[in-house]
Image 1: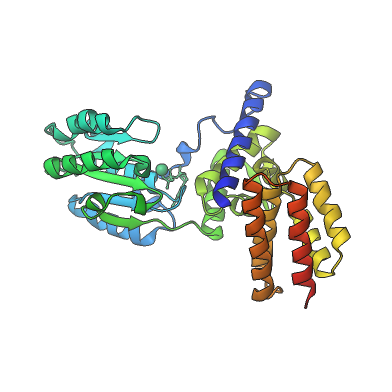
Image 2 (image 1 turned 90 degrees about the horizontal axis):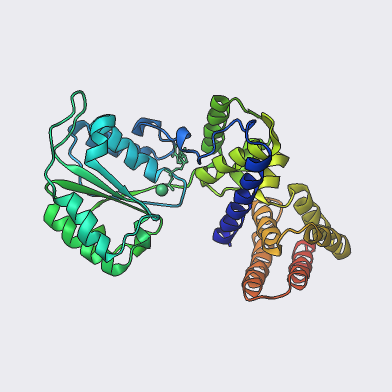
Length: 356
Ligand SMILES: Nc1ncnc2c1ncn2[C@@H]1O[C@H](COP(=O)(O)OP(=O)(O)O)[C@@H](O)[C@H]1O
Ligand SMILES: [Mg+2]
């Protein structure tokens, strides 16, 4: 459910940025490319991934890197860490010749592994850079490696074996289980944790202050609650809201609007009506949400999130609602009617929550 929500809101924000570029090209306070300028430049600046940062800083001291496998959810700092290590090892000049970064937008089938990657991995290294550790190897960053086919990964494994003296591989992925075992076992593994609300809040405030944006109370919370631990998504929401509304003070409601999320007050109204066993009242709010064009799945996912977080609702009640939400999720994906599914979810929620 979560992955689909991500996808929906990404499309939504993309639409909005198109509109903004046409209507308001000058007043955009944040430059257009995604949030790369807010990317930490050194390993030490990477937030929340303490164990990873500590281990990598140790490795940096000796400049002796093994092959590495970074895995974890999107927007948690994997690419940031890989680029920061390379920058700290080689400096900006040598970086250009010693580091090759291939991500999902590059063709990475078996022929690329056999030609481009092998070509890069097999060439000898040149002179070191002054003032940087410049160890005598190159680094190949394979971002989003879990989208590579098994055949391409198998070919990569041979290249890793043959050229490990002059090249280190940094394999980055979301799902470690999609990396073939012979590659995974050759790498030091680092797990990246989803970022909690506090860390996100801190990073967003820092970025906002650098960009001259004021975050009204609730704005940072709205960014983090609509991004599920993905800091990249949270920053993109902030960026889209700033562009769309063309002002420097951003409120929680602005963020909710660009995220394509239902107003939290509406979700709260539904829960409150269900707890009082007022099915009609809850359906009234639900219908109006649907009429405003929100997808039923969005409302269902916010509803279950709010119910799970509510400490006044018992585990048994939560499980009853969660089960029905999961069924509705599946039914909606299979093409069921939105209002009927929502009615079913609301009625089960009423029965579960009213039985106190
Ligand atoms: N742990 C973190 N500390 C600081 N900034 C982060 C962190 N994780 C993500 N970011 C921010 O989010 C953006 C995307 O992070 P990135 O490293 O590309 O994520 P991914 O794990 O998907 O590779 C970065 O530009 C950076 O600003
Ligand atoms: Mg990445």
